[in-house]
Length: 332
Image (cartoon, rainbow, N blue to C red):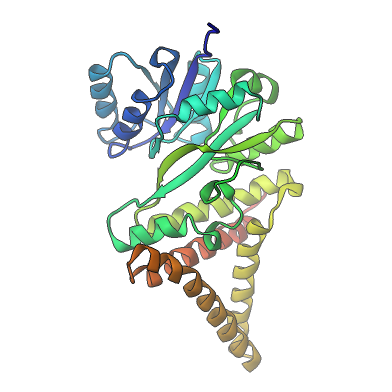
């Protein structure tokens, strides 16, 4: 019988006491043989009970190797790189501390790599609410809606495809020897930047809907706004290096926000600008309501008719504003 490759599951982590046990339990229950799995958690010196939760789980589940390493820089790419260096697996599989992989997640990922379907293989996110409130459910719905995320197939598609990027991802360790590790000058978008380098080197990124993972969305609009501001801000930094990678879903929010700002600045002086801003925002609201209605009916929650447009608008305006702010914040 052919020996299975060993797998290092690398997890960046900081103050994740609420969810770290969920991801560890999901990894313990994997169909892939446990003796071939190790979990490397790069912790940013958590100030809550995250480390205690990890230690408790490790004591109660000693058949799964769990190693905690310090991520003193407290940024995601540094965490991933530190965990990769600490691991010894032939396959590197990245997860987040607020994700819960399906029981066959590791098995399917390794199978696709061995079948050479991609140099980076990943699957789909099943977005879960980050809180039990109606706005938490609205944010989860918005994060899986094409109006909110454009053509990011891993958030809603069920069709295998070669794509630009996948969430998290699984790689042969030799890929990092060839491409290098994650860029630690990017505080976010480091995965997209790595995938760009991978594709430029002739690599392929494969989306397999059989690889499934529950992912917890942000719990409220303030947290969502901060998340998408970071995405927009750091996306420009990445695009400056690889301008040919820009996609329509990335260009629309900053163009829309810039247009709205320009019209608002012109409204005190031009009556036509007042009409235009009313028409633009009115049409925008109608489109968002039309997109929210089927979801609200399917989930039988009328509050989603309000919540989903609020969440999508927060995503669009925060992403666009972060992108525009990055233009004036220096090249970085």
